[in-house]
Image (cartoon, rainbow, N blue to C red; front, side, top):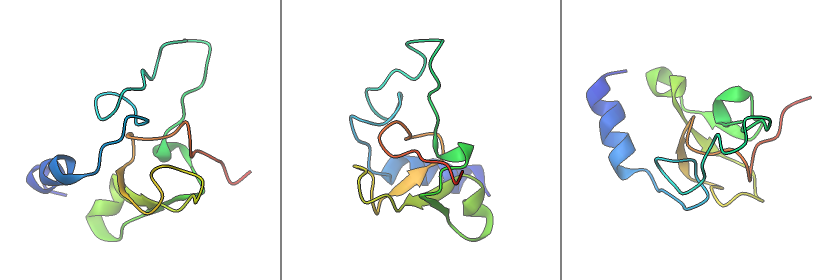
Length: 86
């Protein structure tokens, strides 16, 4: 994927306070003993886009998440919506 397209998507993606910094207000590493998963870590609700965009971008399908239905960068969200397939 071109860096230009990636940058353009980062400019238009919806940013929520519940997202990890720098997109939102959640400090990802405030407690080094805690796991702060994101969509890239196998979340069953993160459906990747097809083609090159799928390497970094997808849509959240967790109805209980504030990001439900939103285009999402893989490192942008996690705490309120992450759930593994296991």
